[in-house]
Image 1 (cartoon, rainbow, N blue to C red):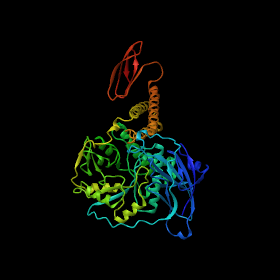
Image 2: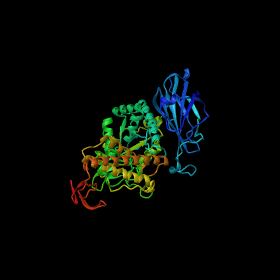
Image 3: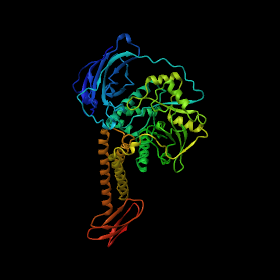
Image 4: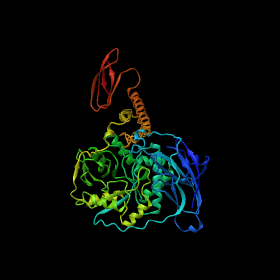
Length: 558
């Protein structure tokens, strides 16, 4: 049953639902093209369910042209009665229809994807903003009956216990700018909320408080539903960093702030304290991290990335990770070697066979769902879980039980080294330099503001969050597209300048009025220097993290 479509193209930055629907919509049909790159097309979808289909599950099915030869991908957010409803993407091509009348909108994004095949731009070169060429061809837009897939025979894995957790890893920026990551979250998370309504036993784990903050700001209806599902236990906040940050390039203080701001957001906004540091996709983990994790109130660590190592794959999936100070942390690498599981029998059985610590533990975690705007788990995956007899649950419950039951675990000491992406230490040098300058400027702004007893809390909080956002593991390491770095350099420059101004205000307040010389020492050790004032030299001494003022021919400590 064909659906009736009209469409409106919006070039440049996305617009709100209210602005979009008040524009002119033109007739549009299956087989018509739409785009161009980085644009948004709003489709108005209308139709009527045939009377003879009454009482049966009906869905609206779309193929927006997902798999074109140009290296593009398409994701859309369905809006119903003025509210975000559910995502449509290559893995979630249908939305449920609950009444005889069909009337909703699709906010469809035409996003180019960089590939490694050589027939599309490399990631660092994809900075397209507009193009006269359409990105996609609409291939399908119709009503259909939907039936759940037939149940599979139960999985026989002996005494091994799998805990399956829904997941939708979304890179805060990568082959798309921050603005598009915000919309990816709305699309994927609205899909997952709708699935939770349909499957009461389904649990979805989601990290990165910065992305939750986006929802609170831009999609309050989605955020309100997330809070409801957190309270009911179906949505599990995991983290605990503000974003899934790179852990090699930020300062130790910045890593602490990632944990402070991440945990603080979850506790204040959701009444939930996460106990897991969840970094499935980060490019390596320094030896000081266990101490920071433990001191932040987290008990567990999860990653998967090291399974990509090209020479020395990890020897364990469940083990104690010991930091350079001796702090130990219960750590788990999901043995299916993916954080985007598809819930097939073969993948689950491989994960059990691959588990390297079966003689010490009988539990493993399985993360399933399509990431990076792929919409997360599907209804078919949840049906497969039911058929195969694999329980869905909470990551925290898995860790608590695994930690209590495991015995004689190996200890891995020091850095967990990732053997790929080594170029991330040297690419996008300007961004790395600005990150360093912003870190230093914020330290000085905080130090002198405290000393002046005039701490601009809201201002510095916002600056820190901007810095932490740009320490995401595909921004600071240099693995994103040009568009990301254009914005990152603006953001980090802004942080550095604002922090310098805050420090200058505090220094002026401490130094006081008049023409006395004042010297400020930001170092953690005392300094003694000769200062050339042009007309005379002055011997200056200042204590660690302190200052000194002029007295006659010298400058003494204050």
